[in-house]
Length: 106
Image (cartoon, rainbow, N blue to C red; front, side, top):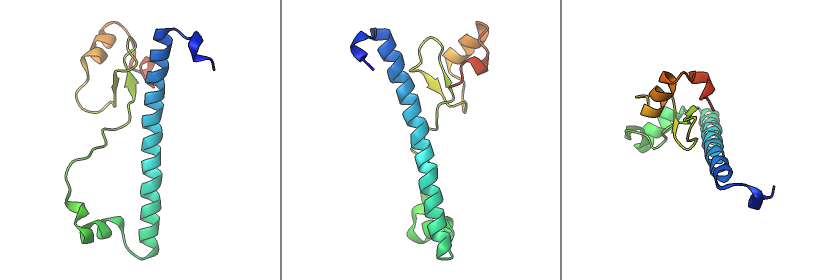
């Protein structure tokens, strides 16, 4: 793919799409890693919760994982929302403009 022939806007859109895809793949990798750790713990007769409690890691609160984006602003694909928590202003504005939620899904 020759990127030098792409417009600035096309490159920005590609970057936004790549960012969303990387976040999805990171979430998948985390799920796979968690499954592998759970399987390893089970092999020794423990649950992951047992091991976390034994190390004190089970007491941490909060999460750095903000979730995988589910929706993107139709006007600016870099603005995304996971579908959880308060709806962003751009989402409500798009709905008011007649854009269906499934049209904004990634």
